[in-house]
Amino acid sequence: MSLLIRSPNPDVIDPLSWKEAIASLMPDLDICVWPDTGDLERVECFLGQRAEAALFKSMTQIKFMQQFAAGADYALSDPAIPPGLLVSRMVDPAMANTMSLFVLAAVLRYHRQLDAYQRQQVSHVWKRLQVPCAQDRTVGVMGLGALGGDLCSKLVALGFKVAGWSRTDKSLPGVKIYQGPSSLDAFLKCSEILVCLLPLTQATRGILNRENLAKMPHGSYLINVARGEHHVVDDVLAALDSGQLAGATIDVHAHDPNPPADESPLWDHPRVAVTPHVATLSSPTSAAAYVVENIRRVRAGLKPLNVIDRVNGY
Ligand code: NDP
Image (cartoon, rainbow, N blue to C red; front, side, top):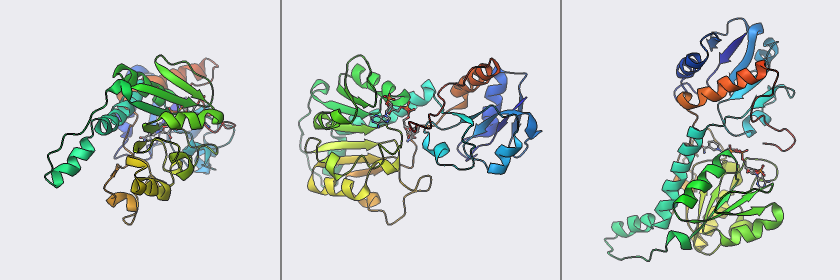
């Protein structure tokens, strides 16, 4: 049986590095890298993001698809993927750490008002701004999964007050948990820096809208590193212009994976930091072990880890 690797973007996700890392852990595994498919009837695992329906049909013995990505939305919106095929999301500690470091950079920039000093410098203004202690600043994290959970533990270690919002109840040391839709208002009310790490589902699409942004403290900050469809661009801009939001870091855009169109007002807003969906990425040196673990599990008759739940949508 074999593993077929097909990178959605070989410039960013180098399939040969994945092959090398996986082969070092499972030397007997027959690994093919697209466009060399080998005998498609021998493919047991497809490591990729998208493929044509005909390709899936040809892989008659496929046991599961291993995504490069953490988000479930790509697979769930792809009609080519057979609905009965098990699809495992990428979950990897290094990927979580990379995400946490990106978000921490943005949190610290706002917490220490480096964005405000940057604006002051442009006008040659020498003015010291007040700095609240980390313990007096609440960071709200929407989504407490593989990525949000890691971020919370690091924010707690830095001394921040941390609030977390998830669908089901959780217990995370040092984090005040808000669970479900009925607690969303209370969660937003205390979130001075709000980080979105939710999956994109019917329940979360458009959640960062005018109504919800208005529930946050005046002058708070937004960091969206989840999906572009979580925020409503016009509502974020209106909140920035009214001062309800003091700044926003937007890593994800509704028309991902393409960059936002030149005319997007996000580009030029002085209080918006735009990045091109770079908050994190899976790395073969770390995540190859997860892929190998899933292949071993499937060979032992078990389900791969972190299979996308088509009912919950993530
Ligand atoms: P997980 O599935 O591990 O975690 C999702 C979290 O969101 C869980 O805590 C879940 O709650 C919570 N959640 C889901 N639906 C709701 C809801 N309706 N209300 C409240 N909470 C909800 O995902 P990951 O942490 O691995 O990834 C999160 C997202 O990050 C991905 O879906 C993707 O969109 C984005 N991402 C962005 C990247 C980037 O570079 N910008 C890269 C990788 C991922 P519960 O725990 O109760 O199930």
